[in-house]
Image 1 (cartoon, rainbow, N blue to C red):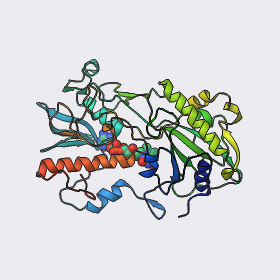
Image 2 (cartoon, helix red, strand yellow; image 1 turned 45 degrees about the vertical axis):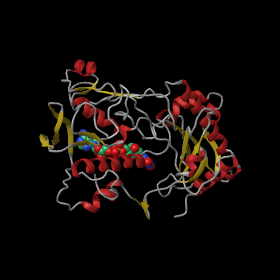
Image 3 (tube, rainbow, N blue to C red; image 1 turned 120 degrees about the vertical axis):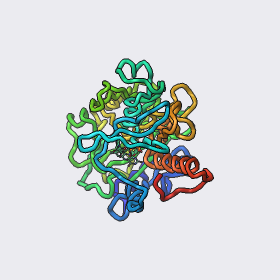
Length: 374
Ligand SMILES: Cc1cc2nc3c(=O)[nH]c(=O)nc-3n(C[C@H](O)[C@H](O)[C@H](O)COP(=O)(O)OP(=O)(O)OC[C@H]3O[C@@H](n4cnc5c(N)ncnc54)[C@H](O)[C@@H]3O)c2cc1C
């Protein structure tokens, strides 16, 4: 389908500020360090295609696949340093599922460290403080939390332009800091106002679009901690966003660029005015950054792969010090990918399936598993 007029005008406006246009946001555009394009969207006509549609729906009738819905993993069972199963809450009862070969944890960057810690895998002192028996001291569990924190500038439409498609159809990468070797800012467009509660309170126009500028290479690091040993208790999410002064500088530069792009003639027939930062914040962009910051929903990196003391998994996605335990999700990235995180998470799943096939079936590790569930 033809992209929204704002998406097309945004790519043109970016070009007017010196950001070259590309046919798609992959490969060449990322390598170039700076570029704008219409986004790739996984869609079949008007319907988004999910990872479930691609990987699981085609194999639902396989005899060796069982999917349990409404089932919440509480902890991994560990015996003599080996993962032997999981405890799962379903219909108010806890069931134990034994694993003869391998437990693969793929519960995302918030819940993977949570389940690890409830299983006794984490920082020894913290686990002891909570009264959780320590199975493996790994101080990096829950540390290193990253996201592409972002700062939406909002432009009021001259005439109402309803969103269409997935509501976000253009992507920009750019390098604003001279010391950056790859893009340090990722931008997307929202065909509707995107804002924090603080900005919403100040009166956002009803008919508006957003230019969302995110930190592609954030330096601030957050962490996830358990509140208590009780599984049902909420976790403590310490984002520590903008705790590194360099992130504040990059964020300011990104918002300045958003304003410059929004002021280009390619958008003059669409924009009535710049609502935010606008006249309220123009002389105090740091306040705007702190009040407008919202997540990109790309939280990752909380059980990172590596070799230093904060690493949780090795190069084969195996948890250090615990046998038969693999992690396959966005928590294993040492640092957040520059762009959107869904596709890199799929690559982790593909890689996990290669590794497990090689281990369990003795196949060559380069065997392609595209289209198969891990
Ligand atoms: C609102 C939103 C919009 C996004 N938009 C985009 C986008 O446009 N493009 C893009 O590239 N990325 C996008 N992302 C990011 C992307 O979806 C994530 O980075 C990616 O899905 C992370 O994959 P994952 O495998 O690490 O975890 P997830 O996809 O979160 O998978 C974890 C799974 O584990 C399940 N789970 C968690 N805890 C338990 C438990 N205790 N027991 C059993 N199951 C459990 C969850 O229900 C979930 O199904 C978006 C994210 C959000 C939240």
